[in-house]
Length: 144
Image (cartoon, rainbow, N blue to C red; front, top):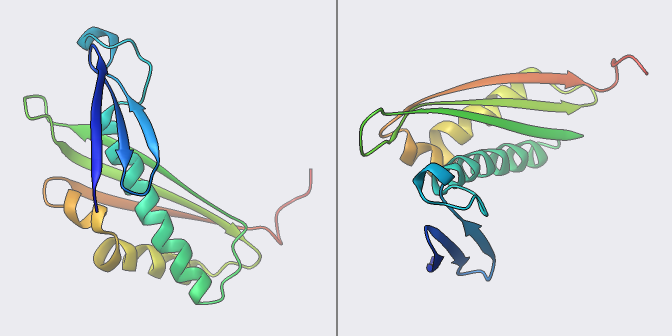
């Protein structure tokens, strides 16, 4: 796996993945940025959420569980002093589908956290990571 990061100006950079995708990163205005891109530490949280969601969906699909939607909200706290590493991270999974079995969603999240999600396991070396799960049964939802 490879990546390349090129300076644009100020504290703005363009990151290019080995698979050919690009993203603009920039610092906050108080750090000299122009707010033209995502913060690098935000990208870590998005990567964690994406890695976890990928695993959960893969596990559920492999188990032939019908899913209509999966959203992962990620919040983190950082150390007060440099290096301002993440010290606590919370992931909230909201998964919806027809008659979605809570235990299967819970097991998929657990497998991702403990076995498959490289980002979660890596970030868990410096931060406590907590997971919450909300399962929405789309069959019993009231119609609008």
